[in-house]
Length: 250
Ligand SMILES: NC(=O)c1ccc[n+]([C@@H]2O[C@H](COP(=O)([O-])OP(=O)(O)OC[C@H]3O[C@@H](n4cnc5c(N)ncnc54)[C@H](OP(=O)(O)O)[C@@H]3O)[C@@H](O)[C@H]2O)c1
Image (cartoon, rainbow, N blue to C red; front, top):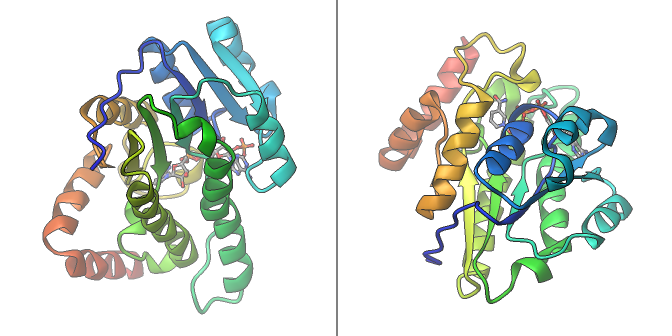
């Protein structure tokens, strides 16, 4: 285990999907906790205007579509002295394994949620693999720990993020890099707008992620529901599979 603990003060971070939802809250939390600079990745940088007005030069907008190789290269080429990468950009395309849109929904979910993380991480790998302490934070989901049938192909993509996070951690074990997996439950963002469940706030998620950085946590369950799921998963992963299957089928 890397045993790296990172205080955001004075650090440089890169956050994908930073213009709304959890990504925006992470940007704000990092800057409020004293980060020197945050590269804010967004498909449309005009959507970062409010953040830019508030934080000035400490917020550097970068155009980033994680499904576009050229966009990734251009967005990361200008990054200097990176300490913290946050792979947050994500999409939810509904679809079951046997549904008519199985192929298209799986493709969409994997393109953004899996390949986006792999490609962006590789694009900054030389900046992360440094003698100094660094961190990669990957936003998975509780749906990555047990498949939710109504969101089956999304669950597949988030399980892949869980696995690639473990792989990154193993590969970087001697590189002073904290590799953190984050497993949120339902959070009050556009993505979860139609989910009729009690939701925690993106601000709370962001606070717990930054706390995880400071604690050097491998796994962060950043909200009320995910804390329970995390504890249950640790003792009985089969129980989570059964709970998610039953819950979503109702
Ligand atoms: N909300 C939840 O309940 C929940 C639970 C568990 C995990 N998560 C995960 O948390 C992360 C953030 O989700 P959220 O709830 O904040 O969702 P959100 O409000 O829908 O925001 C998604 C963000 O990802 C960006 N994005 C989507 N496709 C992209 C692409 N191809 N390239 C670059 N950016 C792209 C969006 O940019 P645009 O504005 O350009 O679309 C937006 O900034 C995701 O990985 C999600 O899977 C969310």
